[in-house]
Image 1: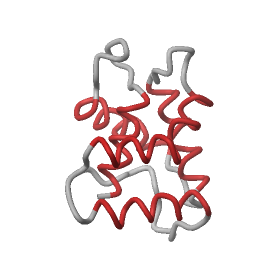
Image 2 (image 1 turned 90 degrees about the horizontal axis):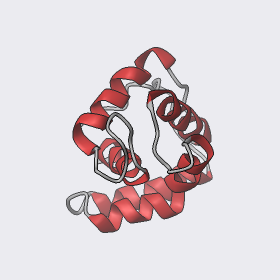
Image 3 (image 1 turned 90 degrees about the vertical axis):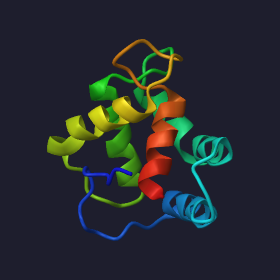
Image 4 (image 1 turned 180 degrees about the vertical axis):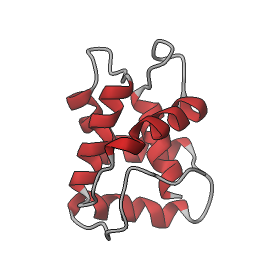
Length: 119
């Protein structure tokens, strides 16, 4: 489990956080399964990835940083740009899949990263 190091100590809130909170309650009962990853994708992350990623929905480091900034802004947390590279490296190590070229992260990988941070 990786802590999201791009966030500060503020308390998250808002509509997006409520969606993630409902998923977190379910996550506490078990592992990060495809069900939870798909729920996070459909409810929260796919739209953000589409706004930030290239046409094939794969994110390079800069695009992942933009994705995290938008996500944290939606849940009213501050974004720390200096820590974005480490978060991307963690996400790439743990959640890279062959849906995207090497050194990029897919929509599924982004949702898996968010699910892992939430757990």
